[in-house]
Length: 362
Ligand SMILES: Cc1cc2nc3c(=O)[nH]c(=O)nc-3n(C[C@H](O)[C@H](O)[C@H](O)COP(=O)(O)O)c2cc1C
Image 1 (cartoon, rainbow, N blue to C red):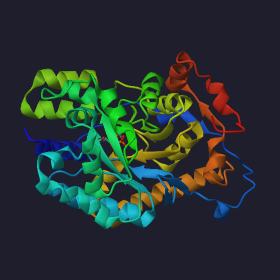
Image 2 (cartoon, rainbow, N blue to C red):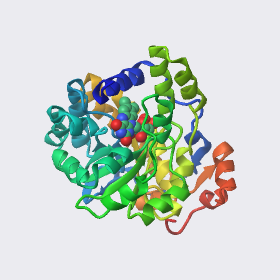
Image 3 (tube, rainbow, N blue to C red):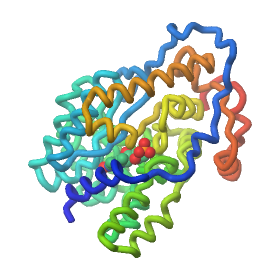
């Protein structure tokens, strides 16, 4: 099966099936409401900077697609909307364009549609190891990228019969690419990044981690559906067994931020409130993929609308936590309950510390 065909299957399954997990870790969190915010909502500044560019609020559309002619329109609709609202955008894995130059334009069209925003390229750690660090420059040039995300998706690869599970040497490959012209972002795709791995990545020269944690799209789940469609019941079973495997997004945010990384919170970020919760836990920004896929198949104005709903809820959460700018939100009290709290405490973090106003970011 070609990379491009597999990508189309993924999009179709994500549009048609229930691909999320049964548990929403973000529901374990609540920001402490302020009945007397003491500021005017109109004076709130939601803006931030990312990769040297201004954003309307700390948010990105996470990388999804490109690589098949049919995916160009989705990417262009996402890009037009990201440009209009002022958020960053990632593209899906550019591997297909390394294999077939004629699909490059499904990626380069993103930069044409969105000349001003930060755009993040994408490649798997296994392909980086095979292609060497020069691959990063090629991918960056293709879309005039501000950074390249190197994705770590060994869970998904493990449940695919054709999966590539050669993880040895991945960290060396990342290290060799970490001092190039464009920064590298280490990114999971739904199973999260632990503090142990964050420290290894930082030591290899990576400064930004996109946690891609558990709680949103399950790639093990997507692969289970794909396997069922082909009648491969063994792989389908594997996909279902590992559906909820991984580090929950809020836990991964805390672990990676505590290790010293600049963190993008993603995996199950389903509203502007989840974006605000992410910032209060220590992320510099948040991202989401699945919620923008269906709107992007309709048109750019549908994506704009979805982004504006996120921004409005983010601003309202800032108002109701008395945060007049994003740096205030970083110290807003946030209560952590349930399974998320238990995991954090087992991992050596006191949830109580987040429940009180903190003078400075961690
Ligand atoms: C249709 C689709 C395709 C994706 N393709 C890629 C990809 O090529 N590379 C990548 O790093 N992540 C990919 N992702 C993962 C997302 O970037 C994100 O990490 C993950 O879906 C969790 O976010 P979510 O819960 O908001 O969807 C894809 C996600 C979706 C929904």
